[in-house]
Length: 153
Ligand code: NI
Image (cartoon, rainbow, N blue to C red; front, side, top):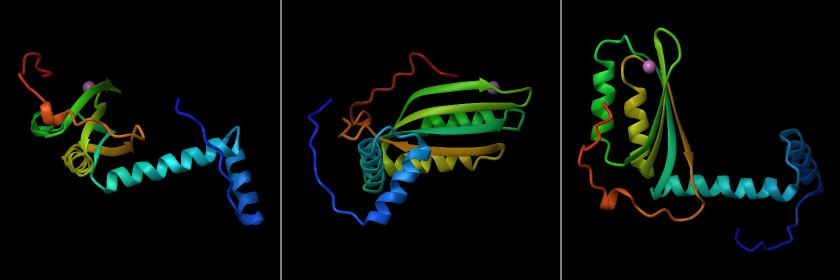
């Protein structure tokens, strides 16, 4: 962990009281931890909005019986210009599959990819979670070699 710095903040008493109430409900042990999380959350938005190299997860739920769906999903994933770091697939019940993709790349690229997957016929629900390390990520896609030695399908 990097060095901690203390700083003072002036804030209206009422605002601080409602903030304290709110973070208590959420289970924060300290005001500092809550403020750190708020700042990190802001940094995540900033990173995604400025289209930097970043990471996220895309969760989709789909009925695998839907015609052409599996082929479409595979095709879109192979055409993705960013990096799919990992995929988790769970057969939820007789019809439904849940897939979580861990993706890395430029923010806008990841958003487009999530939209593409979510809008396929048969995909019932899709959600992109944007996250970050809080620091700069080295671009993986820049030196990416894709030799299809271990096909995923
Ligand atoms: Ni399945």
